[in-house]
Length: 147
Length: 82
Image 1 (cartoon, rainbow over the protein chains, first blue to last red):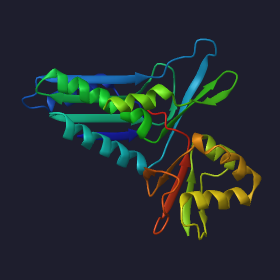
Image 2 (cartoon, each protein chain N blue to C red):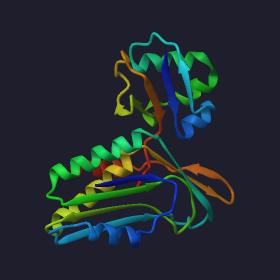
Image 3 (tube, helix red, strand yellow):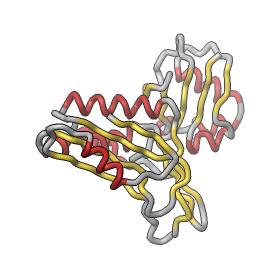
Image 4 (cartoon, rainbow over the protein chains, first blue to last red):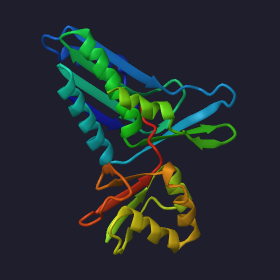
């Protein structure tokens, strides 16, 4: 299991290759990455991500533990950045491995849903004109109900 | 003494990331009432509790959580990770 909360950029390809190389007997790997996207009508200068050091690692650890207990997983990896991020840069990634794809896909979705609303990160969009904290969406909270 | 932490817009409204507070508050709600009486900036930050979340000792909880033995209380808006 790899959990990393970091300011530095990461290389999604290199992380994925390292994750695959560490597996043994796994037939399926699922990866997902969230990217900083620009705003249609208000060009973004950068995204600022704040987090709660200590609680963040603990919360992600519990979410990963829950995923491992619910699905037949070989391994899981979560990398999440904080600090100053530019448009096009990866914010975070999850990777899961399992003997079969359904477990890998479902566990990756579960990890994503919980990371969105239960890991203490807050995004702020700093544009040419203003700076706004991103509001949590109701559908993100509702997404947890399906698990 | 309890360490009280603020994140995101809660931190910006209060103007501090954390502070140590001497309190007799038995629950998170009581602590909030105490803070709101302190100064207008606290009153404003805590005016709509539905927009706030709380963690006690780094575990997400609710406003009636007891504070006995708690070392750290954090207030923040709903999380927006991922």
